[in-house]
Image 1 (spheres, one colour):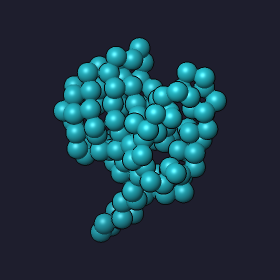
Image 2: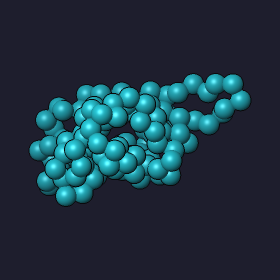
Image 3: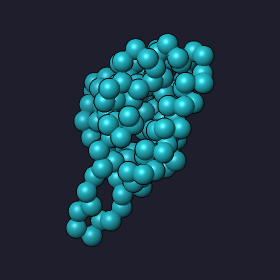
Amino acid sequence: MPAQLFEVVAPTGADETPAITLHAQLHAGAGKAELTGFGQSALVLRVAAPPASPPANRAVRELVAELFGVAPEAVSVLAGERNAGKQLRVEGVDEAEATRLLDIARAHLGDAPAARGRAGRGH
């Protein structure tokens, strides 16, 4: 269930901007950055750069921003800048929208023949 992939960030003080946090697991060596599946508690992403590098962090921010329909600047790496496992914050997305967009992404992966095997591995 996509809702388990993220947590809603409670607004603090005067900041009423909706936000979520989520985890991503990166795999290097892709020709392009792409979402390849859903683990129990993380998005599974492929990037061309080594996962622990600044270019990989940039690619992840851009890919997650595209997935959620926000600017790359709205996505920040909270933890894991130098690891394959990353915790991300996405601003400008509420719980309902995050669930809707993850459902769409999951359905799209289910339609892609190359993604069927990867998405079901339980990464």
